[in-house]
Each structure stands twice: as structure tokens, then as C-alpha cells.
Image 1 (spheres, rainbow, N blue to C red):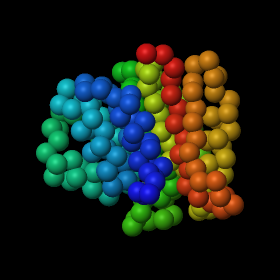
Image 2: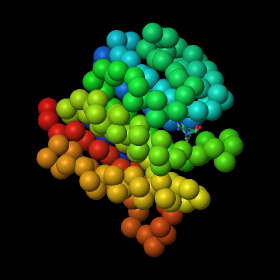
Image 3: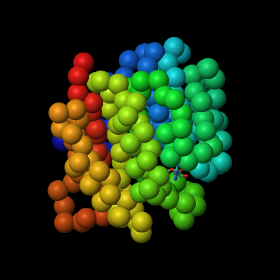
Image 4: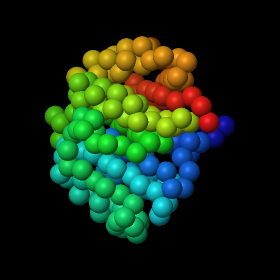
Length: 190
Ligand code: SAH
């Protein structure tokens, strides 16, 4: 058997199902910019990607990656700001948003996403999500703070109206409760 897809690869395949060239997408946690690059390539030159990170290094490293791959500057807009500020931005209908929670690998492990900000951002993005759009959330319950954040995200998802939202969860059926897991929130329609 070939290797099974990792949760992040599954997140990307969900996004590929929903996003077309010209669409608008959000990377709520830039990190090293891998997901931003993925989104920029999907939306193409006519599309738009907005990204957020509270760490300057993450914004700079993402910018370098996008430049290296010759992504047109007209496609992306990177904010050195918390994703909780998304609620203040008037968003065009969003087709996809990616949240990759936790800390930046290879960076400062004390800087982690928080339930409060992540939920505020998630709510703001869902409010602007187009029919047929998707939000992916990678949760990492394995570090201190990540466990409560993961629980709160799950509680939030449990409350979503199933007439409007289809919610999927991917994780390993395992005794280890600390493994990362993926949530996909799809807006029904189209
Ligand atoms: N855990 C993942 C990577 C997550 S990177 C993995 O192992 O692959 C998470 C990023 O979110 C970090 O770069 C961090 O700076 C950023 N971040 C933390 N709080 C944030 C906030 N409130 N708004 C935006 N980005 C945030």
C-alpha cells in the first residue's frame, strides 16, 4: 500500500474541490507560507489571497516564499496582525480559508494560537463564506493550550446548523488523544 494521505493533504484536497481560478481565499495562520503558496497557485493571477500572522518572521518568510515562486504581488495581501482582526475587514465572499493552529515549527513555541482569537476569526470567516466554500482547521491538542483550543473548536463546530454547514473530522482512531486532527466546514449549496 502507498502512504496514506496526512490530514493536511486531505485539507488541501478539500480546498481543491471548492476553489476555482479567480476566487478569494484566506490563510489565517501564515506560518512558513506553504499553505499561502498553495492557495495563491489555486486562485491564479485573477484571484486573491489574504493572510494573517502575529509573528513578523512568519509574514516575511511567507513573502519570501511567494516571491521565490514568482507569485504576482497583486494576488496576495499579507497582514502582520491577529486573525481576530478579520472581523473588522469587509470580506468579499470567501471560497476557502485555512487555519493551521499551534506554534510555528522551528520558531518560538511559546507563541501559539488561542481559542479566543481562533474562534473569533473562524466565526468572521464563516459569516463571509460563499456557498460551496470550505474552511479547514488543523488542530494540535498535543501541546499545553492546544488541548483546550481543540476542545473549544470542536464545541463550536458541534453547534453549527447542519442545514447550512456540513462538518467533517479526520483523525487517527487511536488511544492517543494528543494527535493532530483536521476539521472541514463546508457551506452547503452550489
Ligand atoms: N502547528 C502547525 C503550524 C502552525 S503555524 C504545524 O506543526 O505544521 C501557526 C502560526 O499561527 C504561527 O506562525 C503563529 O505565529 C500564528 N498565530 C498565532 N496566533 C495567531 C493569531 N492570533 N493570528 C494569526 N496568526 C497567529
